[in-house]
Image (cartoon, rainbow, N blue to C red):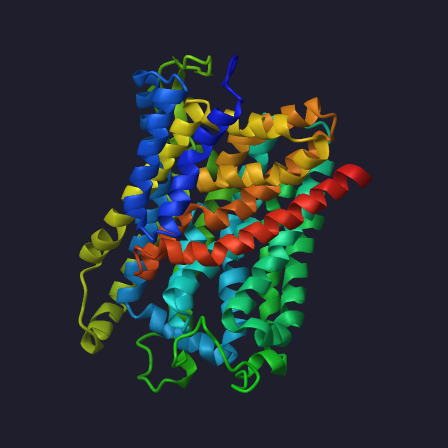
Length: 543
């Protein structure tokens, strides 16, 4: 995208940020549901584009169509993820898994950290694109976490893994657009800044679980796991950034067993030690008297084992990966331009989707295999004998259709902001009004803005990586450091990305509670942004 006259005055800057502010106001103070807030934000972005940014109707139409296509990329995860959830739920696997985990460790805070932080990060390392949220949030609910808190934990705790996760997709995309010279330094500083959301992700889970007493109980565990995850990623990133999140999360996953043997984290927490537990239901799972599960713990883990094997097989077996990557679908779009000279060139295949290597296909294959095994084992009949049976397909439609509307609206809004030049007005306006060190302090916020708009670390890096690199050069600062801030922001910004939150509320059965989730994740995101900004300034000054 090239620009010639994009406006950077105060009026246009305020108008450019208006759709984002409107979305946040609708969701948080006004407590609108995402299917209502999303279209309103989209409408606001379109009006601003037409009236203030000289965006012709054909440009608006192309931007909207691209947004719908971007949404299909995410919906390709949401629908199979919800299908896997229903297939697993209707067989009684979640009940079996919850009871099995309770035997593994009777400390529910340990279990929550293991699921929301470590297991979700492992899934992000290999699959990503919403799979951790779709898989982990229902598990948190089964161990006694209230649905809204489960969504907040599931969305936020693995945000640190977003940039180097999915075998380095975001990292590779950022290298393509940022033109950094020292790749090793960029990887190191990115991983260094990402240490902040890594540790704070674990501490927030502990805080929302039981406030100060919970922190006093679990701080050694958080520091140990945070070091394995964050420092492990940093060390591996020096020689293999693409594998850094996956290997660090796998190491943390293996470390859970010896840590569970630690008496402090293997036994139930005395009620007098943590008297108030706002994130938990009144009666915890390990206090309930219930019938034996319909399947073994090992069988209940089948979906996650199959998902891991399928994903690693597709991504790490070169001949198979090369063959499957040939099945790509992309749509052609013409060149479009605005009256301010913001031009988007014609593309023969816009954002092509690799149908067979997309995480959605891996979830779909996993769903089919698990459904076959559970059906052959008679688990659906056994579970239906105890509970009122639900149709997998009707339950899928009830969950997935309302979740799809806001995702489409959010992604269309993102493309309109991009194609009309509103995104560049925001970025260049911040740069023009900011001295070099001030810009360094807010560089990660721009990355977080991209993640908020697109619900993707990769998309944020593609959107703003080139802009951040150019501004760093204009200000005479290290490109590597500013790009590292972009990387960190593109990761932690996913904690407030509306499409991620909608996915979580959908699988948790609390559609319409997106604002309640954001009221938990927003303060954390602001704190991480401030600390990341200070750390970026320190790197600029002292590195």
